[in-house]
Length: 255
Figure 1 (cartoon, rainbow, N blue to C red):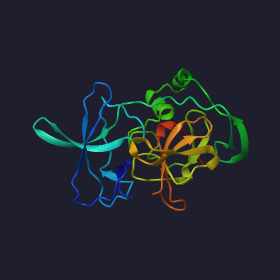
Figure 2 (figure 1 turned 180 degrees about the vertical axis):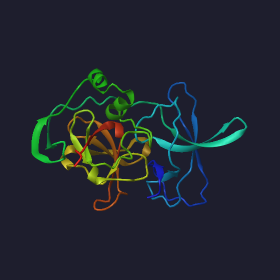
Figure 3 (figure 1 turned 90 degrees about the horizontal axis):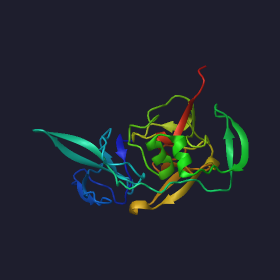
Figure 4 (figure 1 turned 90 degrees about the vertical axis):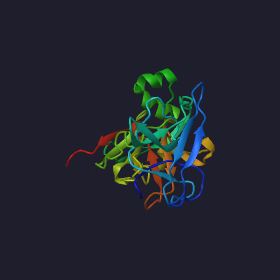
């Protein structure tokens, strides 16, 4: 896979000579609209185009929000010299807080070594917004896990971690992924070709921003984890593109 910062939107393949697409994103409140110049990776698959380039630089005055944000390339002139920067352009509106849905859920339990200890039907984890904020502390973690935000590519924890270990939900410790299924997607987000157990995650349609995707949530506490795409490696052909801040990594003991 080409190394690129990925975003997902509707549209067909782009040719190498296709000119950049200029779009003006509406801004909430009294903020001025933002002009975005999108550079599309040649040969991108329909529905999964990628902008070219490696690590994206953030714009501090723009808050990252839902994973359905767009990544754009912008040219910024610094002094007399023109310096090309890749910038993350995001709608600054945060989502509603996911406090959790009361009820029962059946999940598969795992030890920190990744060994299954069987299925269990338990109460779902539900907390108020204030309780989630107090537990998670970090603002970005709260906005990602409880408000369907996203971390910037190449900046979150464990995106480049390939050591043996287990990933648990940052909110409730539900087991999510093993590093055995992690691969280098080149996107700057932790990517896996399968969860540790299908019962431990929930996949639902995401049609925000006029796009059709599949978002992934924790089955135990409803935390937002990321999205899944159909451009991953075998044996599943899937790419579970997760936010690093939404997970806690437990390294396997040294042998």
